[in-house]
Image 1 (cartoon, rainbow, N blue to C red):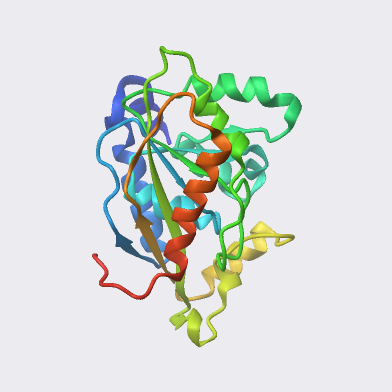
Image 2 (cartoon, one colour):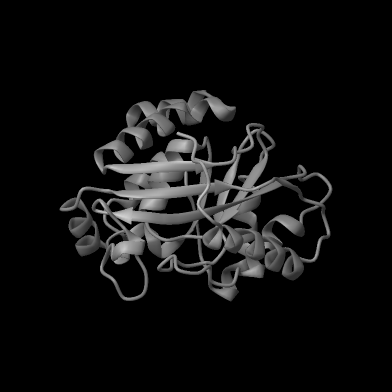
Length: 242
């Protein structure tokens, strides 16, 4: 962590994410998480990656693929190891309470830089991954209600899809809940259960980027992105890139 702190302190721009990405890659390998990638993440800075959320392990997967910061609800800080992981990923933890909306907008606005990327899990929660929960349109107001000095962002939808767990494809009875973390599950017990298994295969689909226009209707945008993200869950099997 001291080395990461020095990078954040003295190295600006996307270079500050070199060590976190390496760290997440090592952690992903230690957890025996295999990742199948469809499409290409946008390489330029100023990208808001928007997608669904299955588990705390998603941050490890995406952190190994992207040079990015994450936006997460503040109760995730209480998950085992999440404070350390969040610091490594330079996560912006936000409150979902309505009375905190102004403070949240200020905190997120401070992170909006044209050379940085952000990941937004737009469901506002985690799910089993069998479907994509409705996107919280209120989250998009953080990016659409900005003044003219705020840089234009490009949105890139992504889909997280669990393919197999412990060597067994989900279609053949694989234990989805060993990876997916949702509902009343206990974080510590969930992590320990996963560590006793032989890992999982997760597919990440990066969809075509979308230019973000100031003043867009957030509800229409949320519905449009939800449709794109959901579509990959029912897509037929296609060739996979390493």
